[in-house]
Length: 281
Image 1 (cartoon, rainbow, N blue to C red):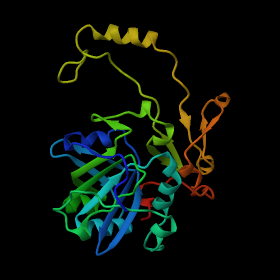
Image 2: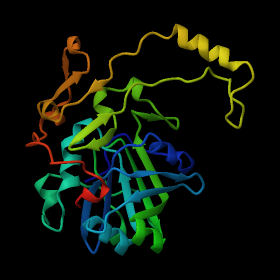
Image 3: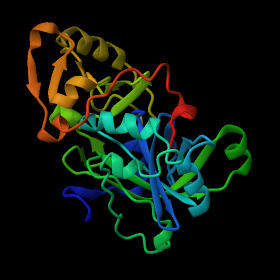
Image 4: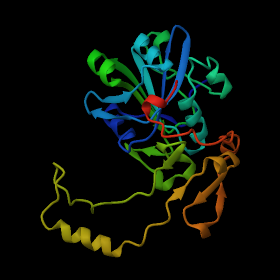
């Protein structure tokens, strides 16, 4: 399939901002005509220029084998309607379910402009995500074998232009269905919450420290800010029915897009915490 609408390039010097808030990611890779996608809870930005990221990939996963063979991988940020899909891709392995992507109706598309990457090594991308980063593996055999830690240089970055604008996330002006997922354990995710401004504009020096006299200004902001709105919570069974619930019982409910209502309801808990070594791809 073609790249989705609103698939917008992100300057590489801003790529680290796509991961700064610690989201759960989908990791994809391909080699020899075999694509695969898994979920990973431990991924983060590592460096600015050239931009680098890290991700932990267990030795038992099929995706890791494809990453090692191709030398490339992609990190993608799934959104709230993709919670059940993310859980499924993180708990089923292509070793035991070779048709995993077909079973879960995972569509894939190719990133544009990666002419320097051989076609068979280009990681496929998953539509519906909030952002995508394509990375070239920086070989670190000791880290990979001892800690399952992979380092990648970002060679291409994109985001949905409706929620990432001018180098910044704009969650506060987007619908709740666009919030990123943050994995806790046992099939339990949080969605990113409300924006909080910690300082008034112009009260930081260039190196990032507080300017003299600014603490009082911050205190004034703290006094005048209203109490925070209830942070939305998302129940995976409700998501399957398209229902958005709030942590405050009197807030009522609203409906997520039709895509969320097509998600299959999870059958139950996974029986314990899912750490990175439990993501089976």
